[in-house]
Image 1 (cartoon, rainbow, N blue to C red):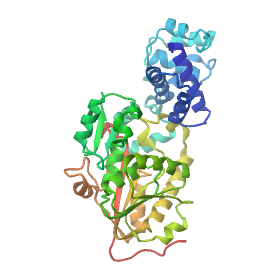
Image 2: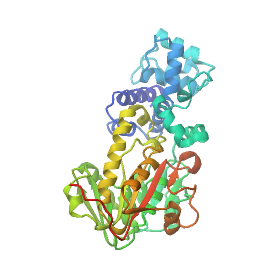
Image 3: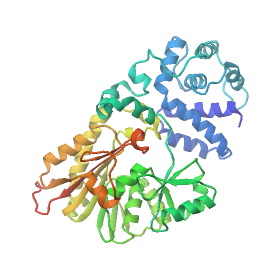
Amino acid sequence: MTPGAQLAAAIEILSAIDGGERPADDAAADYFRRRRYIGAKDRAEIASHLYAVLRHRAALDWWIDRIGGGVVPVAARSRVLAHLVLSALWPPERIARCCDGDRFRPAPLSFAEKRLVERLVGHTLHHPEMPRAVRNDVPEWLLPHLERAFGADLERELAALNGPAPVDLRVNPLKGDREEVRRRLIAEGVAAEPTPFSPLGLRLRARAPLSGLVAFKEGLVEVQDEGSQVAALLADARPGMRVVDFCAGAGGKSLALAALMRNRGKLVACDVSARRLERAGMRLRRAGVNNVERRVIAGEHDKWVKRHKESFDRVFVDVPCLGTGTWRRNPDAKWHVGPADLAELMARQRDILKSAARLVRPGGRLVYATCSLLCEEDEDQAEVFLAERPDFALVPAAEAWCETIGGMMPGDGPYLRLSPARHGTDGFFVAIFARRASSLSPTDEP
């Protein structure tokens, strides 16, 4: 593909995302799926333009408004043009050559677009006059929530969130140990290093076409951020236990939990989406996991929950959240949510946690996890649960870390909180509750 064709592809994908059709990763995957002739290098170039615009949309929009004066509409095309000057440092002449209207390339620049491009030359992406939210590329309404979570570290954490994420793999202990799998990857031309926190993690030195690797096809590895691996490890799922992954999705943590159980005991992967559980089934088969029952439930109040109350040793609840901890991978997500979404999610999180707690047997544990960085979805929810449920006691995260991973937990406090700047992982929060052996539970709800 020519550079112009790559730009046209990025603009088309961004337009689909702006139209609310689907998230960035889905939109890009669908675009490439329908155009299998596009090679790996071209895909990488298209993705670099795409994600640069999504990560810095607020700053790009500010410049378009400031320089364009309302003549140039703020849209996928103008954002790409601004990115090319401010981030990629393309000279106007190169942009004009790539946007010449030839086959597969963007239409020629209008007079207003030429003026925008020329006037942006010499400027940097961020400007001292930008509001703090714009300078940090976050929605204005979210800034107070992030300030509460990070305090003086806000700028550093948001800079990390606006950067690219590494590719982490989780080694499947059912099929090999970490060093053995690392050597297998090296033999296939993929260099990886052990992750610092997860004893099952490998971090790639450079991106690679994983789906074509023998190690991937044979189920030796799964793509999973190190923070997510750690969250699953802290559940302390052991062989012979009865375990529930209450919001299983496509099964990433179900895979991790089942592998820790060594295919002994029973794990029930619950989700409201049959399609997601079907995807989980394919991954489970590839990994050689055979102790998982996939169950579609109508919601957190499904009758199955009431029928199986107090019958599981571990209940893992990775609740739906705003996903602020995954912005490195899904930067478009920040622009598609508002205060009403946060309020709705918080209410649902409390509801899910309360319902999932019914499944925990006396002496068992309930693990609450999010990929959120907001206190409102993390510590606040844990404190509300403890206040309402005297039959549960907090298990300090450092204690669970010592039991499962060993050594000192990074950070302090009663919960685990991971972030990109401090730990190099996605943002993750984990709270662990143990059900007291003597039942003090409130009356079960219908």
